[in-house]
Length: 421
Image (cartoon, rainbow, N blue to C red; front, side):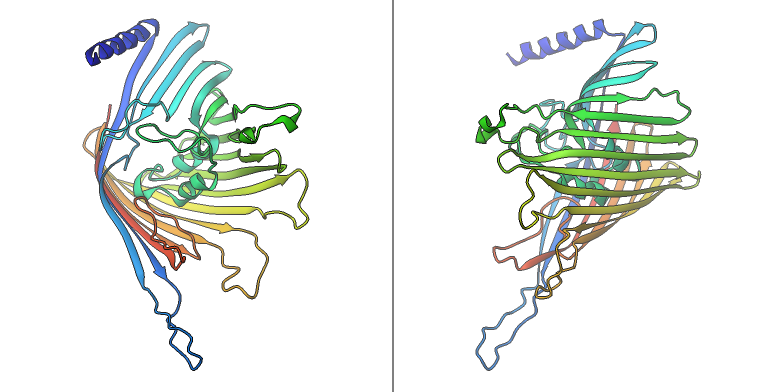
């Protein structure tokens, strides 16, 4: 039975190939030995008994959670894909792109979903219209202007923080070998309509994207069932425009994702993201930079008497560098983020005005054995302050029911090999 299914799949691929001008099978297999450790500390001082017999409190020190893994995607994301193009004549072309994430370290995830990209497009002198699941415009700046390409322990904090900052709750987290495609619109968005400018504009480029929530809408709205009370959650709209010519590349991007929607409460929660990235290749060295600002805000149909929840801001920046050395490449970056909950000052709460923040230093080296095969090594360290809890990957920070421990540092390394085909 299994052999029959394999044969049918091969025939299906062959059928597609015969109908296209060109079809390409491509992919990346990336494996690494990776280590992660995160340390949380008890910041409360030791208190000794006094004349009133107050119980003693003994500082509990620190707890480190760590793991060592044979991981994947430390340099480039492991994937398997099919893409093809048909020349329609008159400058028109039809294309498809189906790309699946794979976990080659354990083989659990293969072509279960095309969760990385699944698009069909029509292109010509007018540009390209692309339909399906794809990278969002705002994420492009995070990955293009990061020396580590948002992969492995070196991934910049802007990307790490924003990925969770704009999460939403439905559908439920996937299990097994299936990637969840419906919990965040930051990296990729589903059900999108995109337009890309043509490539012959003297270095100027750009795109716009609209992603549908695909939820049922009821009119009159009072008939909306409680279980379907989030008709706009998951919707995305964004755009990115830039200029690339010679050694210079600069781009500005904006995106708005609806992460919460409650008809009966009269609220809509959105995460609006604006970022600017740039790089300049001097030859002996290439510099990278990005600044980013995201706002998680609630729009109220009727503003609550006490003003409702304040907006939450997330700001960050990145500076990075790559240095070619023979067949190798040295990579380094420093990134930092800061959260602002916009809470009013309270003199009775310790460190009331201390906003959570974190910074990260990453260093790495890539040695190219050929155009398709490379060895790499990366080390990174995050310092968290005022309750921020970002990690380089692996296990999270230890926490107990009493909330005694505060996240502090997270360190990690990747040593691996990448082969592309």
